[in-house]
Length: 151
Image (cartoon, rainbow, N blue to C red; front, side, top):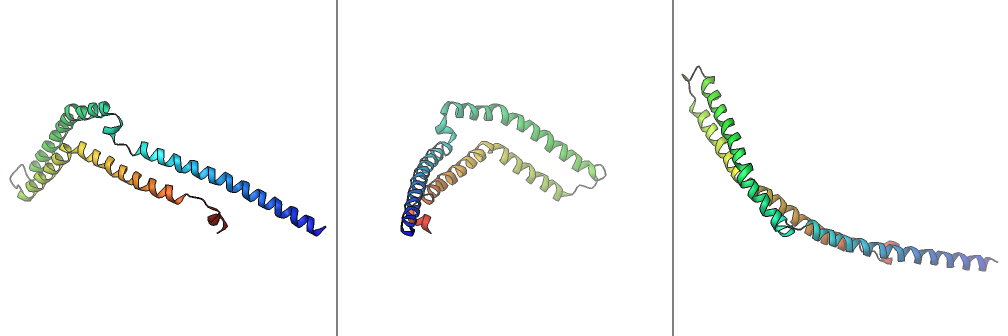
């Protein structure tokens, strides 16, 4: 009787292990395929995704947003300069170092403002690079084999 229960237990164990392995192999194959497709879709640059919309956004940035931001920057820089000059006894004691500091801050603000679209596109390029590298890593590391499950 012991022989029969051992045989039945081994048979059920092999049946269950085979079924689980078959399901997991299919599941991870599907996951690998989906990760590859998602990486391609998410890693697409805005210009490659829809060139018309990208061109529209670039034109809006250069013709609408940039001039408005320039006006705001002009107001803030002028207000800061006037407050700095009036701070020291109505311009009797003007510190030249403060003028240099104001010129440096204003030059940095203009530089950042004039390259805002390029900075945003650089963020997209970096994220696209990270996504493409991680997709290859994920696809290679999710491969399931019987040896891996035994470990």
